[in-house]
Image 1 (tube, protein in one colour):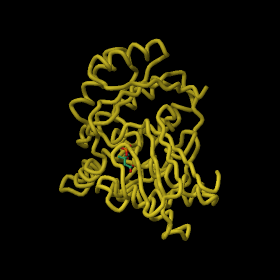
Image 2: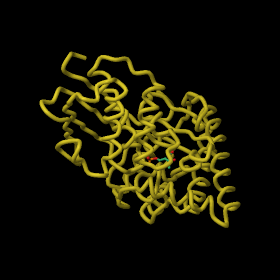
Image 3: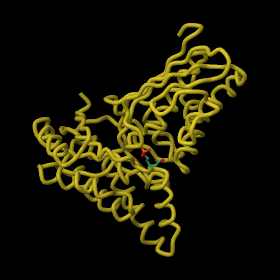
Image 4: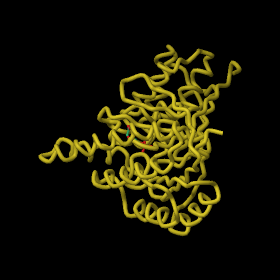
Length: 313
Ligand code: PMV
């Protein structure tokens, strides 16, 4: 850091198991996804605070509603640091596709908070970072579990239960994860709200049971990851996809990619993140099979694919 410059970064994240159910206190398993990154840079502005990002360039006071959560993170960081009257110029660059279940809203909040603290040369604890990002995620997601904030600011996988200390997981799985982007924006806020309605509806017992089952699958998956049981993890992923579809958060595009992956030898496949668009993941036995699956997914319509080595090497 120098006096007039601050920088902060964050990575994308992939939820292996437990999206949506994590909001209701069930466990989840997620990995940081450094193949996609966000970086925020901060310098001094002359008159008013400005921002330059993919979706908007101009004064933060005129930012579109879509970016309200980012505006909030800037305000909260400046107020917390006692600099609410200062004017900053922020630039955000990103390779995390937005609204695709990779945690882009949390990642931009993490990178921006880190950049502002770096600009003022103030140490930022993980607790303080999660508190500030949590405020912005409430606007972006309505009822965030905190998982995205944790994962986009971490470099290791975690087992996460809302409100409990997060537990690091040592990856030890001889398998390769294929991540594919449907190219359609997911709707995390709407998806979380619609699951919320189901869980509180007249049929609540049915939906609460599904949430519980998703939690049990996530719990078992932690063991599968640590004990190198790729086949069992694959089956758990398939079971989770059925439950998530029953909760109404899959989509035609996600279903098509899941079917394509399974018919090309994937051990398991499911959506990841909020759903209703966004990304899906498929588990392959090795890199050669993962490459074939990725190619099949692109032929089925995926806009981008990535491979992620699950052995932790
Ligand atoms: O779509 P994403 O990447 O923001 O992931 C959302 C994950 C949910 O479990 C659906 C919501 C949450 O806050 O954990």
